[in-house]
Image (cartoon, rainbow, N blue to C red; front, side, top):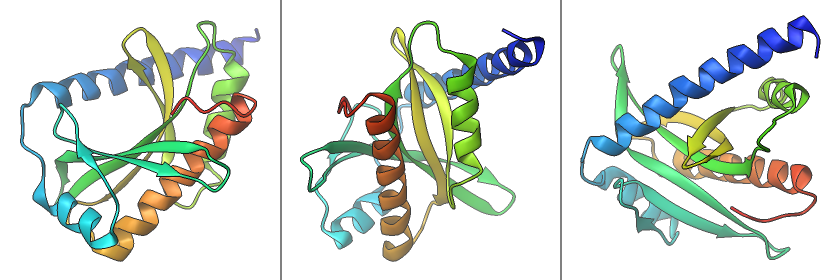
Length: 169
């Protein structure tokens, strides 16, 4: 592996650690489910459940019988005068010895999407590539629906490509 790929891989590992800390901190907050999310999900007509973190979990089914999980976090963060929530979907589990080229591919794809970005998080013993978009916490029905559909489609397309048609999420 060349030095530049090693530097990139090290940088990505550092980013993974930061993402993992954010996920753990979120799970420890003990907040309740945000009713604003329930309101827009129900307005769209989607089915959902609230998970143990009080996030909204939706399962979408495609015409080719594939499914995709999408989550809308109840927890929000503030940036200036903005309140932001994440909508995200797991794409695929990374191999134990993840090739730097696979990680670079995720970074390259970030430059091709209109909304959201790939990140890598730790889930138990696994590293998982997730596609995440940040939206206004009080996003209207149309905005929420558009972003959820984009996150869902992007994650499922990448899962299908990386796993040769596998459907774990």
